[in-house]
Amino acid sequence: MTPQKRKPLTDGDIAALIQMAWEDRTTFETIQERLGVSEAEVIQVMRAALQSSSFKRWRMRVKGRATKHRALRDPQMKFNDHSIADHRRANC
Image (cartoon, rainbow, N blue to C red; front, side):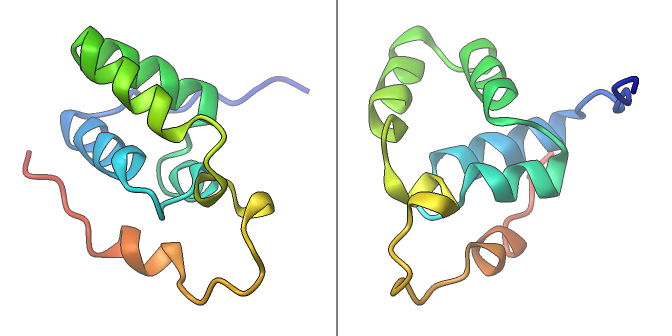
């Protein structure tokens, strides 16, 4: 099976991706569903878009964070990260 090529991210997509990636409650799975960008690709975009110190701060923040992965979340969590991501609109 050949992987599908997706269209390049627009400036607005990158802005939305960065905003969702910084939020604790928006999972990498939600980012993948919204923008078609895997966790590894999110890391690449964040590395390219942020200053080095900001990228390092973000990586330290999300590394191992249970709220960034649905499978690691406590089933008792009552919020839906889809609704959080829905209200986000890029300023571009």
